[in-house]
Amino acid sequence: MKQIILAADIGGTTCKLGIFDQALERIEKWSIDTDVTDPTGVKLLKDIYEALKSKLNTLNYTVEDVIGVGIGVPGPVDFETGVVHGAVNLYWNDKVNVRDIFKQLIDCPIYVDNDANVAALGEKHKGAGQGADDVVAITLGTGLGGGVISNGEIVHGHNGAGAELGHILVDIDQRFQCNCGKSGCIETVASATGVVNLVHFYYPKLTFRSSILHLIKNNQVTAKAVFDAAKEGDPFCIFITERVANYIAYLCSIVSVTSNPKYIVLGGGMSTAGLILIENIKTAYRHYTFKPAQEGTEIVQAELGNDAGITGAAGLIYTYIIEKEGVK
Image (cartoon, rainbow, N blue to C red; front, side, top):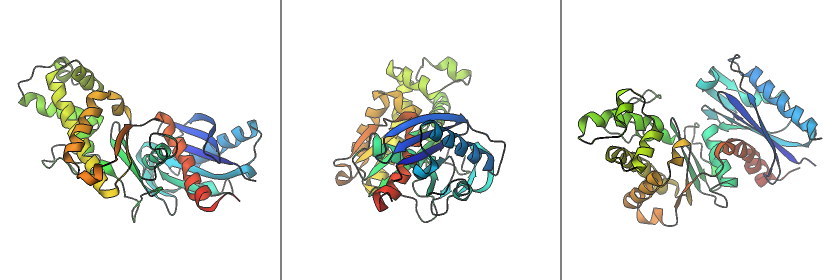
């Protein structure tokens, strides 16, 4: 009987790999360097397969034991076909059919999805959203990403652009350009990049003194520096933190009336800022959100950290093969 799931979380620098049992308990995890020299993706995917196969041999498994392979990729994915529509960090400038390439290497179901979606699925199955069928995960890093789980499944939309939460327009004045080409996206005001944008926008306009003035003048501001100074009572950094928290709370209010999640899971580097950010988000969320939509909803910090990707990649097989069809 088939008994294990293979998982890959592909990043621009490293690929995190994992082997899980059919209850989604992790058996092994490790990583390999990401080879970005081949824009067709073939070499990288072969590297991943060979690394997985080698580990199987070490653990006395064979490819015949594999239920399926789940793969998370940092780019837009057509979930139905497994086609990645370019991945900037991997230097894939054109479409790469990850499913077809991997199917040539191993004969089993292959599921491919965007890395933010699989991270959300990981938190739903084994992290802060465990036990709930309706979970929204928001990743607050250099950018802002997200994944929406509704009725136990990932929301993709009709062409794969569903749950691109970072590109909701919140800055009506459209002060900062987003990497997507438009301006005003929440990513430009509520990510680590957004924190820096707001610092440089507001500081010349306000009379607050700040302990991070030297960082501002030398163009060395980081989100961490702002949150750390806010914890120490810096009035300007408290002001910036509250602005950022308000934007994130507004996003949470939108997802609450859209998919009504049980858990809104905040992950990424900024989520570790602590109570100074999280409590401000919760306060603004309660103020902004339609009462029935916020009832019973919890805003929580992600639990899986860097393991969310491989757990969610394995979760693709668990969700769409094991739970739906059963292991044959």
